[in-house]
Image (cartoon, rainbow, N blue to C red; front, side):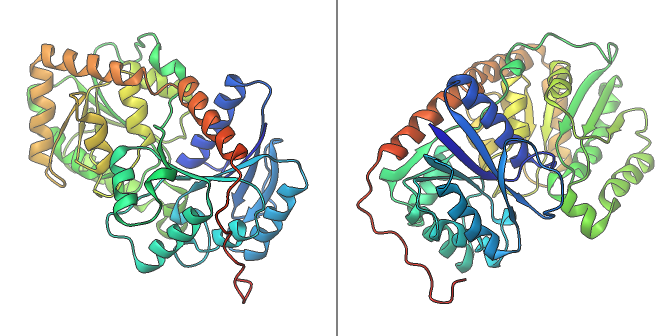
Length: 387
């Protein structure tokens, strides 16, 4: 089976690019007979690409979407996987992606990385058209599935829940000792205001007053889109906050895009992982998935994905924008080693079902089903204006 994955992709540093690379690697490992090519959505067509990139799509060039769809038909591709996030594609609400699917003659499976409780009219229109074209649509959680059905975006019979995968190394990474005398709190991922890290920093003085060995590691570059519009203003603001609160010995910024091996080492020595995100609408988080799979107890705000993943006891939820509640939750866990160990044990239990090896096998089964489906559903007509 030959598969084409439409997504951002390395060397672009973003969560969906990492997801697509991990998915590709895992599917090939699960079935060495399959070939997985990439259709890379890029901002700059002159930027270097990896050998597995079959073709590229220029984010804001609608003609390139149509050209890519036609090109796939010439390469004996059996099924196409499209990783969808509104910001990945050009046009209003990412509508340029419809130029791709309207010109695609191959079976299509769509993975929705963002599901909103109150999408705009344009967002709803794009998703309905996209999912109408797909043989199957996948989401990461049952909450996302319920939202999709309730909004009549896709019929329940063509919806599947496939969890976000994690590298198998996270499930068995040996303990690391980079900071042997410190209790590590950590957060990793691309930095942006939506991560709510200022609240985590604001919570630290109360934590440090009772646990003076605490060190909070913030690992990750600033998000490329933030760099374009605001430079390093967010990171610089966090650094000023750390200085003003006299926390320089308790917060460390590691300004780099961490590879899986470094993430595994970070999580292996993390006592509590923090996701103080500001938006309830976040329906998936690769960072939170990685942390839980690695057996890290979590303190998080109650965004949708955190509610789903932590419901059985792998972490504690605190209100949005409430530094006092966050500090209390951290202290309560650190003060109660038995409770901390119970949360870690539950996180490891959840993690056993998230390994990429298992997720890839399930994904390949769905792709074969989509490939073998002879659909009687009418295909969307190309729009008269060609746009």
